[in-house]
Image (tube, rainbow, N blue to C red):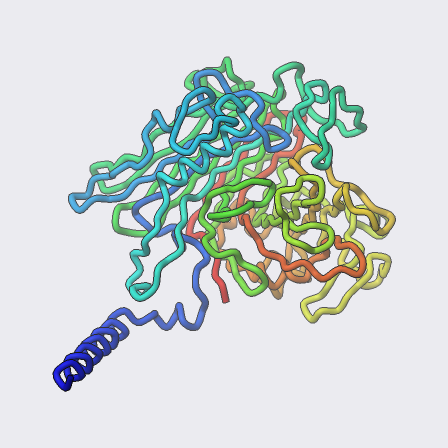
Length: 500
């Protein structure tokens, strides 16, 4: 009995010493203990083993029809670096080419020949191939890290064929033809097609640089190798020195007369559950969803702005909750996508004004939590808002009100679009037009949680306030119905979401 007690004490002592040694050598750095922890799987885009995916959408975040010889518009480039410094790719090109009628592990019978469902389940499949479930961080030695999958390149066309019957109206099925006063672009039958997708899997070059890209066009009969005149084009290329620095993502987006409304973003989406704009399971980079106390850091250089209609988002955050404040559950009739977008293109004006209250949120909340009503013309910061629109399924809206486009999401949506203004300075956002624009590359540290917690979002009277959790955070541009060909070009790096 004494020997058993002795061995037990010895066992405990050895383990306590082991933990103490590890606590000493794997101690959390001071900066992480006092400046917050990252909500991302790859904080700062520094990890050699890249995880990046691609998704393309039509106007209402659907697929409808796959592009010929392209497969479902989902793809990924995910690899690890071996000890002998070779890139071990986890996703094959045959995986990326998967399309309706082709089976893969986990695919449901219901989705096999349904382009919309197929794309959703293909993203989950690619996520399973790319998932990182173990942390390489030494200070996480004594705890299991949360799994994560990839950065997401999101490409979307705003073309909308009102005769095709492909999109719901605020989540409700809407038979064609749709009668609307909104002027959606469409060149005719087939205008809601998916784009071509070319992929250069990441390569390790002789100088130690890793490079890869996605690119393509919505013009299915075009050959981008012969030039880009009169056609649409998108590209996201990435590069990093092996063992040094961080990934730099270089973006290009070009509209055309046939495709005048295009969107391209690099997103950090939820790793589990819904992401902003999607009423189904997605995969991404945000392993912990930020709420109120968080900052977003990134480096951005804009080389071409995309013209006066380019709503370039310094930051776009998205989430979903019902009008009664309850979390979304996938019911597209009652769920509402919520967006807040800071536009930094200096050509974009404030549609909100003392004479256009319909474009303003009902009130503004200052950093010291003072509420200013929009009809308080002496104090309301009209120039801080480009546009506000309310969800089309809200029942108790305050007049005057502008309703959001009911077709471009699978459910109702609410959008708060911001502009540079001194009122945002306390949160680290731009205070003057031109800050961060062409010729002014910057590293931004934004108190996004502080600002987002004070923005107006509609809620039914006498209901508990929604617990705002942000499921998508992205940077990029929406070139909004340009009347001529436009080009945008920018680089993004150092991206991180820091929980305080």
